[in-house]
Length: 445
Image (tube, rainbow, N blue to C red; front, side):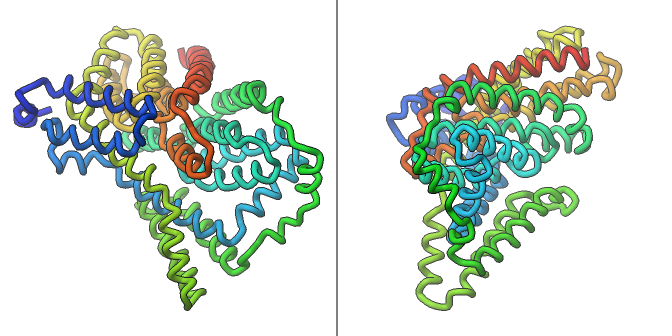
């Protein structure tokens, strides 16, 4: 932080400590669940500006509009697609593929989520999967929470396997010059192991006890999926647009487009097609319904949280922590790698992993001469990726997908409590990182 910026902090206080205190209080109030988390985040963001840690231009710069645009665009796409009956169709197909057994469906949805997350943004994946989940759970009369929890974990785990699966990987790949194949070869093998272990744990916690009545299962198996389609024209339009959007995500780097642009353009095109198909009062109703389906609480929570975290970043806390981490490892790359893995995991569970990864990249680069050059420190990038991506599972605010699922879940009457989630998620996250620790040590050190 520059001296000029420091001079603007109220009463000349240390900006790092002021921003850290604001972050701590914001998270504490969010965890208390006494006030809506979007309100808390926005108040915290406003205080960051009022006390002088950030000015308004810095605050706006700190908001990841790509994430905001991606979220909004995909919410619109999902809202319109839902009206066609697409997700009801998928719900019936998925349930029947698992013979309508609740535990089998839990496994099927985890695998589906993990695979999609490897090739799509995690938030996009859960936005597509969660409506299917609610339809399945309603039909079988089983609790939705275990399925949603499992999908959060699967999305963050699956997204770790590829270059395009998670924002930290995109940052690392683009700034270090690592390719799609580099990520698959080095991370996909251990991610498969982690996914299997986590699926087993979730089965022990919930899956083995999930039950549905024989009548409900028989009713599901007797269903005709095609009868759930309410608008065949809209279904075809939605499938075409969604396919193009997904292809756009995969080819985003080659097209020189950001995911938000692709998602918002796809949303606009699908809204336009839907509007053309209904030249009456229904068109206006559909537009209002579509925008009403956007999870505005989640959107504004992200906006506030991005500003609060950016204040901490500008205040210098993340840089200080990263610097001390690098210094504490001395000249031992194995120790450096393991320290980066665990520190990234725990910090990413409580602070957005994108600014942390952005801070760590130049610091890890600066270690290259001590270890024989850039080509010799590649294991450190895998430690950073695994820690930052998997660490996001540790708390409800650890990753964008977590909050997205929580927002949709609460609107559907299934509360996602911060403390309850963390009591289950934190130990499981530690297990996944411990598995990666063994893998990193065995393969690279």
